[in-house]
Length: 177
Image (cartoon, rainbow, N blue to C red; front, side, top):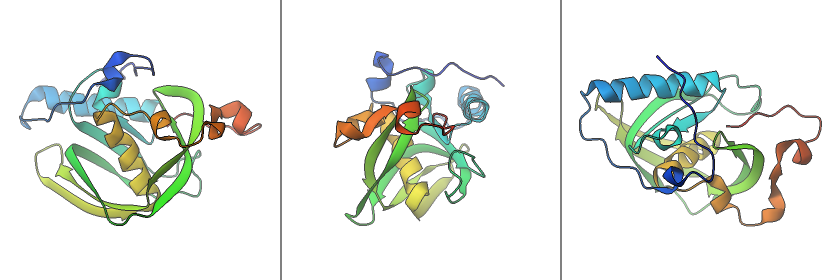
């Protein structure tokens, strides 16, 4: 339906906790999800959270399928996740590079749980319950962080591993997540 403007780091709306969705049958929710999908695709993102487009609801979308920025990443199916709950499956953490549409032009080395279970609902209010690991787990954690007002730079342990993409990875063409 529409590609929406993505808020950038510094906008106070990105720091506000999102509210749970209560009405899965609302036309507003359906439009929001379509707009989020269209925005994510238009910007070649791996995911998008509603707060990133100025909507303070607990809704995320994500998908990775043959993304040139992540040539070695496993496929992550297109998912709409509403009112998510994340449960780590172990204490094992992995660090990997992340970017964000709300933090354009930058990357950082971010620790995330290696495996987790996510639960919530799809666009129609049907339960979603998956246990995932690797890149899939990373993408979900990144997007759900947005629902709690957390941007990935807040998770970086050592700021020596945070910087501009073109400086960190000279000669590589990487876009924001």
